[in-house]
Image: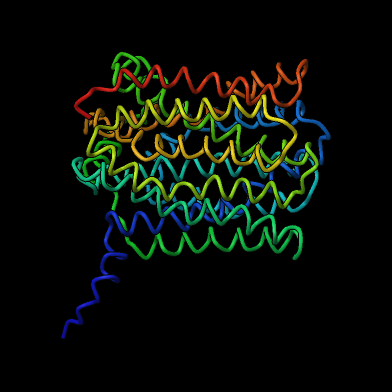
Length: 398
């Protein structure tokens, strides 16, 4: 006799909007717990913001180079194993950070970046396989809003555990959460797309990301989506790395830096509101307004007085603007990419994350060699206005 499972259990078990959202939220919690800890630990180890930028620049280049072997690894081991490997790297990363030396710090940061790339790429492929295109404008805000549970609470939980319970408690819990995400992923029993599996099995050589770069950048709507992703990640990188450092430099505590990151990420709950606005009025207006608001508030940080509360308020206002962009920017890619090119173009598209670490880190390293820390926020704010102008190219029909 068959036992019919409750609806909520079946929704978690079957690949779809609910299960992918839960999986993404659990995975994000592990990474979020380390979000405020890593830059502060690196800043304490290196002693200045310029060397911190150089370290992030080196790690970003390493993760970017590693990304080019992901297609070959997926072709050889398939998506399920690649996603699992990414989660295992995320589980091992905190253990490396806990050894508290510069080499292990760099190794832990690299594993975190490369593992996240493996997880994000394969998850996007699964979403495009199992979620209909017309549902993406509903799922993306839904997924971002629930991820806000992790990104909003994780940094504060992590820094509080780090400060009061000990570093290894924070690192151990982060590792455990990654392993929980791995267990849930295998519970879902997701099957690799049979068409993709057949193609990769029949191919004598796995595809190369480099070979698809010309085809990607000949399609204006894909280039537009890539640029919008670059803009969003550039802002978050500046806030997550230099926001807590700025708070500490102005005399605030590490806990206050963790509160800033948690509160900024907590704004992701507004993604549901911005998703509704995007469906009603078009995502073009949401993107333009979001980038412009973030640019204005971030520029104001560079001219703000030495009032920590005022600086935090400005950064939170800026994060609301970028949350608006987060709620719908991925839709520009998912609705533009051709189904037969999902794996290849997703690999190329995802390089915006690496570019957002490499290019700003290079700029910040140069600026911080000459100018004070606020130059990071001045340049980032100006860049957000540039991305607002680029967002004008989004089709009005979206």
